[in-house]
Length: 220
Image 1 (cartoon, rainbow, N blue to C red):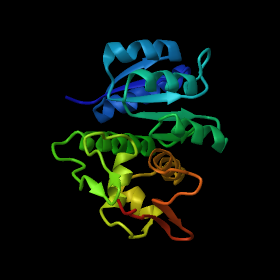
Image 2 (image 1 turned 135 degrees about the vertical axis):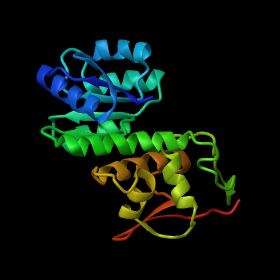
Image 3 (image 1 turned 180 degrees about the vertical axis):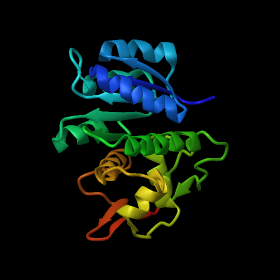
C-alpha cells in the first residue's frame, strides 16, 4: 500500500497542485487548510508523513508541531515562506525532520519526502540499529529508535573516528538527502543534551574544528 501524506497549508492553489503531484507519484494524500483541522485528521487518516506550513491562520505550524509531538511520532517536513534561520532551527528542535522554503522545486520536495520515509521505514526493520549495548560507560538502547539514535549509531560504529558533516548526512539521512546542514547541527545539539553531563562542554560528541564530529568513549 502507498504511503499516506497529510498536507496542511492554507494556500488553496498550492494544496491542489501539490496534492496532484504527490498522487501522480503514487502517494495517497489528504489535505487541511488549518492546523486545527490537520491535527484532527491525524487520528482519522493516520498519515505516514505530514507536510506542514508554518504560516497558518489561527494556530501556526510551530504550535501545531508541538501538539503533534505530544501525541504522535511521525515524520514532519516543514513548508515555509519564512526564511529566517531561527524559525527553521526552532522547527527542527521541536521535532521536524526537514524543511523546505517557498518557492520550492517539487522534485526536490519529493526527494526529501522519499528520504525521510526511508529513514523511518529502516528504523522499523527487524535488527535495524543493532549496535553494542555499551561503549565505555555509555549504554545504547537499540530499541528506542529516537530521532538521535541513528546519528549516535553512526558515530558508534567507529568510536574515535572523525566523520565529516557530509559523511554523517549521507549515513543518517541517505545519499539522496537534499536538505541543509543545519539539520545535522540541530540533531548533534539535541543528542548532546541527552547524553552529555554539560552539553555546552561536551566530552562524548566532540567537534573537530574544520573536519566534523567524533564519539569519544568514556571509561565505565
